[in-house]
Length: 133
Image (cartoon, rainbow, N blue to C red; front, side, top):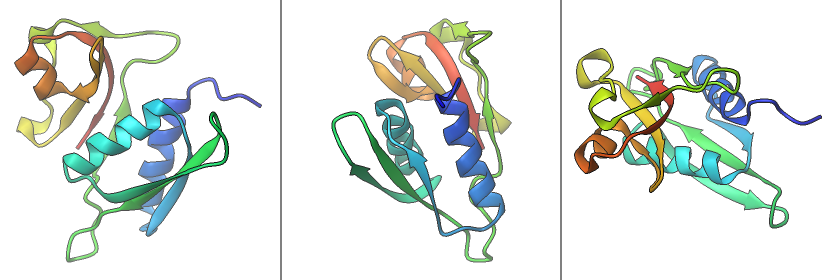
């Protein structure tokens, strides 16, 4: 059965794994999911990820979750913003800041998927995919 929203599935698996204090979670591979993992790693929300491709179009990504020294999840929350039934597009000056700068908006632009702050600096708008804090 095909997923109607693979990005929401990815975010849900990461959120649930983090809440359950799992060491890692496995998610289905897609270029979008791999790009999200790269951003999460660069911004310090996950430790690492490994891509395991079975073929050109199929595979999995093992996402190693990050915790503080007190064993508290680094990811406090993940929320999908633009959904298949209601897309949310923003201009570069409309990209929001979340939780006083501690949160991060992820934007899909014509130049690829990037953090909201980088899209603002480049003055590029796009689809507001999700927020993480």
